[in-house]
Image (tube, rainbow, N blue to C red; front, side):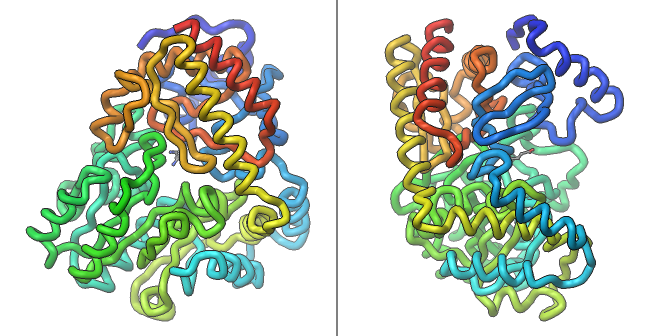
Length: 439
Ligand code: HOZ
């Protein structure tokens, strides 16, 4: 990894990182935040407002991390702050049901046809882990299929050939996970329907279900190939397996009815997170009532959580979805227009500088892949692994110096928010022009 000496511009962040590293492994609460693959120390956040994040050295950055997806309305939207403040004054946690849970559940159910009932949890990891438990219980079969390069959180059975931070740090499969657990995880290349058909032909009696990101986002943004999701739906129907869409990243991000509505596919179970919590720790899984009724206490499949359905998280989620789903606000139309502007601006800037890249985008999810040749579609992990991560790191650091904050990995998705505007997108494109030219 080529590194550049850091300037006094980020002096306080560098000092903060030294202190943090003494008391937390790698100095962070989640590995992706450590900037290990981009050759510099992380910057420490002080505050955020709209599409701008400010670090503890008082540098401002146009933010495309967006907390890795939740901040579809940007930082501190008034309605979300007001709702959370009001909720906090009434009590931060009860260990009792609240009506806010029913309200957010109804909003999710109204928006997503495949969901009759929802269970709230605290993180995407919990949502996917629980959905898998439910799929196994419903089918009485042990194996789950996942795709290489997809990331579904860090539960043991899913930490196999995983994307996101696991891939970035070079540990796609983690020590500490017993083979007896991962024996029941079957791997497939993303977007390869023929491979899925072959696996079902060999092992259908063992396969409880498939879990996948309907748009891969944790190895960079990769849309599903035409017919791929429908093909998986058909295989699951034919072989009594459960189709689980991990929409933690795509849910309410790419469409008001999530990726499943965008592509017209009905999964059996859906995992949600990020946007539904409006920046608070909140996730969910849901599906048809006959499946969800297997969950305790309605049924025998156990899953629980002290802070699940937390009132502050519910308030933030309700306020976020209220704003996002109101057609008068034109949130999805605005996100599409801004993100399309960013994509084409990046493509032109890269071409002008003669840097080969492939910019892939679905709605406000986008990745600039440093592919071996320009405009060569990235469809699966094999394609992703041919990208030039050194070039990405150089690009990342220049963008940071230019006041643009990107996710610190080639294998992550950038998120545009409703708080971005044409002027900030154009500033980003100008910064990218400089970054490409300097490569
Ligand atoms: N799914 C998130 C990014 N790919 C995870 C963020 C994290 O691991 O902190």
